[in-house]
Image (cartoon, rainbow, N blue to C red; front, side, top):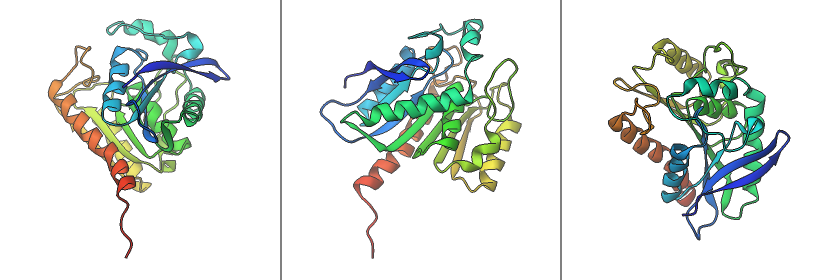
Length: 250
């Protein structure tokens, strides 16, 4: 496994992308790992590394690249993330993910016919947003915030009304103690996807809070994080197994 930053040219300037993949493998299914508001930090990079160890090519594009390269904000310093988060727009996110996929398409070990996206907090928002605009195989959203209601001071617009455009299977993880994503928001997401016939599954961990997957945050919940990881891996592997063993035709 050889995780490292690569650079991609975009209209908004140079975008760094952390890419991790098992060595010596080709035509790997791609998983985009979309950052929390704290940047493509050690935690996000470790998720890429873990996915690479499981046989995926994992790539984490830096969504704050317009405001600086390698932006990382320490956990617990919420006030420091606002200058970056406030300038991020839906259009910028979709453009960045499209550029990232095009960049990966030139890598000999990436199979961009199979691209899934997982995201955390604002990254969970980004994964769902991109599913409304781009062709993705699977979407996994960990406590994606802002999906239903606009948040004051941000340019990001809730994609709830566009979720009927999603053509991917979706998996959601939420924390039952997460005050920023009330149960009513989760219910609205479920209702929209059901009415739009988008295949999805929602898992709410009753005793977990926002950020429960990150072992560097005070809200880390080891049991919920382990359960979500195994569920996510099984979800992502379904596509890989289908490609290796396509259904037999009668």
